[in-house]
Image (cartoon, rainbow, N blue to C red; front, side, top):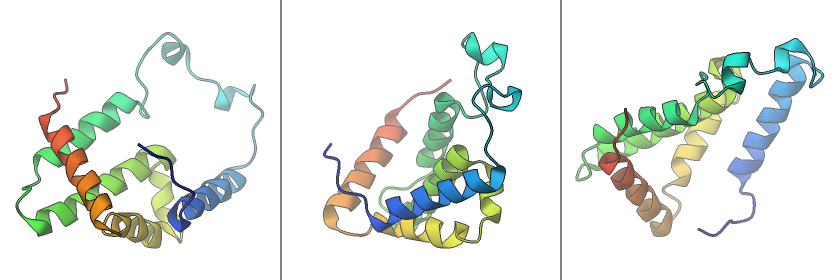
Length: 132
């Protein structure tokens, strides 16, 4: 898959990430708050586990009727919401740009036919996936 230049959505996400980091305060990389727990260093799963996110996305995709445009549109919002909350945490919902960002990222899938097809391919792949 080709990597395109940063879109306005990508730059907005980047700006929001920087804003959240500034508000959270800078911590040194060696501070106890930023070090991974021993269980994670030894291969344990965290709340931000990619496997947990994948399982969540698969569950969302399984509920989608691929022949129903409303179901597909609803799944976009749910998938994007899950990914953003996984990446930035539940506190991100309190950010003033949460709703506009969620709407803008979800709408990006409607930008052109190629994006719509990529999203449909993603849904089909997730529907056919198995998870624990």
